[in-house]
Length: 237
Image 1 (cartoon, one colour):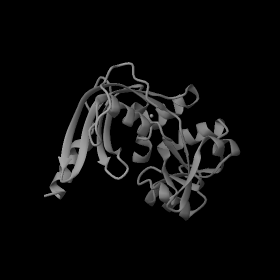
Image 2: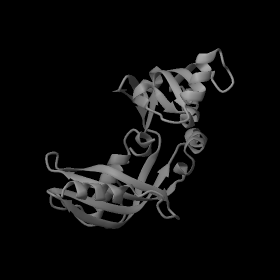
Image 3: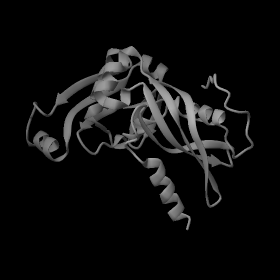
């Protein structure tokens, strides 16, 4: 899910990437600092309340999270961040037609009552998302290692930059197995990225629009940055 793919980064750069730039421009060093700051925020959102875990069509604003995230909830419960109670596995615990219909037509696999502990509240932030509260917490840490490209693109009066580089993604040992089970390749520590940034002239700061992330040794398997730029340029005509 997109809400968990980005949100990771406090810059320490050993490379000489240039000095400060004028407003609206961005040196390599500054680009790395912006991306780290944006990506080192809270990066995991855990739905609270009566949560439905589904195989398709998750919508956390309605209390429907992906069943692939179940190992992450279990790991946080073991670490004392959450309590997970009243767990029901609909794949093997039918109590009637309602369960059967939920499984076969609603893609429901599990249900559970999830609550944040006092320890969890002290480590994260509770936000209202749609009809449900979510506990947002920082897990992984990201560090930009190099910037390979940093190109300006102007659409109408808006300034954008496409930044390509490499970064590391580190998950604590106690969460490592859960992340690997839930997210597969997303758990790999050595990565490449392509990020689309937009300059906000009011805040005088760069905001992230979208990104492509992949294994360091492979080409990107998504094309979100190019597709977004194309869409923005078509809309500006």
